[in-house]
Length: 347
Image (cartoon, rainbow, N blue to C red; front, side, top):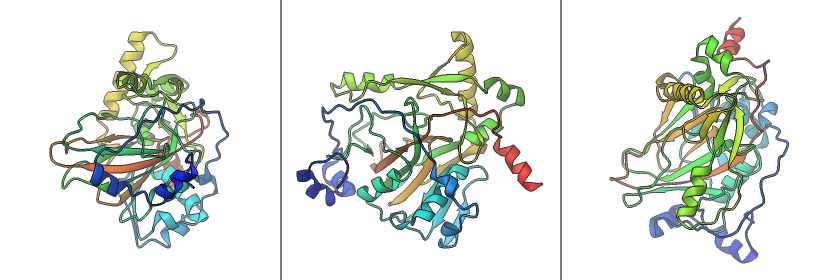
């Protein structure tokens, strides 16, 4: 049974086809009045620690594997995410920790399988304010067409204002416009590496406050239920991934608000610099062009993403996302930059 549903709902949900629902009903989201307790702190064990450094279970069974850019993004053909073994999921967790973004084409995975897949990497996140498909509070739906022009714009890592923000995330796109609607991801590893050494050292150990207040305010304006009240959290500006041990820049303009311990004008100036660094990071960004039934799996802890809304006057784009939560972000002074790790590996 899908999580958080009644027995009566189960019959409907077993055959729930979100693509068909979007084609026949358009924006089908529901906004129940149900509230949830605050998310409890949990111990997260990243399954990438069990991964095979060679990722043989993935690479040996794929028909084609190729990197999309030098620093972020790998595309894998010939595998169905709905049929991965536990070893393959371990190897996938390691690979996505290293490459940030994985692209899979022609995927048959359905909503319930997608939830199971995401759940295998950590507890599923339920958004505090967003609508969702009937009976599926863990599913975040992407739906925009020529009549719906409200959207979240800008670079962001999902729900970074939670105490333990998003980790491995799956997004399947099943309706795409004829042209446009691509998504950008950037590498937090390479974003850190591109900073000067003095600036890297200055940022290490500092924390920035991430806030979801805008989303709560939006829900209030539309008269929708706020399911949880937690709204902001301070996280390290430079975090270290528990599997790779690499340092990653962890700020973005949608949710990051201020740097703790600095005067406002100092915080504003440094964040402005970092946002300009991210916006201009063409050399550490990958652009994914969606096709029907393309799935992207990414690691929200070391990437940010930005959907391109260039299609709102020409077509419809629909998909659904399942999001696992990961560890609380932390900084480890023993961590290395990816560039340092790569250099050591060559020696």
